[in-house]
Image 1 (cartoon, rainbow, N blue to C red):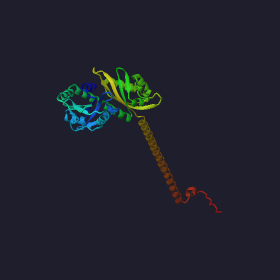
Image 2 (tube, rainbow, N blue to C red; image 1 turned 30 degrees about the vertical axis):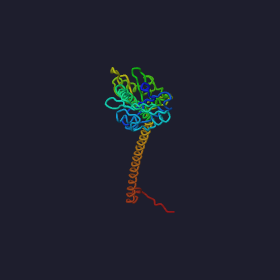
Image 3 (cartoon, rainbow, N blue to C red; image 1 turned 90 degrees about the vertical axis):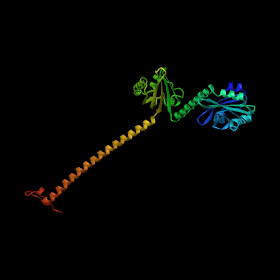
Length: 335
């Protein structure tokens, strides 16, 4: 932008990259004292739809446009420049490549512009070829940066840790969430393979080692749950997933993974198991009590039945069972 602005005699140059719906500023250059403080940030916060303002018109019409060639740009960027820095002229021309506009370069100066054929021919040459490729590359870089920022925000909101393991160098780089999961300050989770395994609970270490070794050897994805012992001594549960990537020679050189602290989930599962066990035990105890109750009931009922039958038989025999035909019974007196 600086080379372009200085060689063509402009005070300000702004590079707008075309997205699906809007133009976004990715680079600003201006001569000293040619733009007010905050101008570059104002440009980066500003977007133009198709046909909106001078840049939007150049994008839509796919040709150079300038002030005096309707529609006139009335957006904040022009207002702040024209009001405070006395910039009156503006030229915008499309950057082409791959069959369509890839962006727009906007130039601002102190004079009202009346473009001639030579200037239009020059900006036509500038807008094609390598500058179009440069616009494509910058747009791809911007989209990658935005995608990385969205990923960072999403993983931090969900407290999902990201891990980049350089297998050949045996170096691990983790995100802030990964450092938090393992109990390290942000930016300090860069453990080697052995240092990482030292953080794994001793009872899970052999299983984790064999799983990771097998994944690297086969180039296969892996997924496992294991316990870690953080530097403070507390034990946490981690659910980890990863995928192995090859380098240009086909060597397994990199592992990208994600981790999630599932300690609370594990505790909830353990509590559910405990409650289920208590429920099963309670049901078994209730069933046993019911069995004993039924058995006692049956025994008592049987005994009562026998007693009742015995009483009926005794009454029917008139007490002969005790006295007998030859027994000598003495009738008790009533006092």
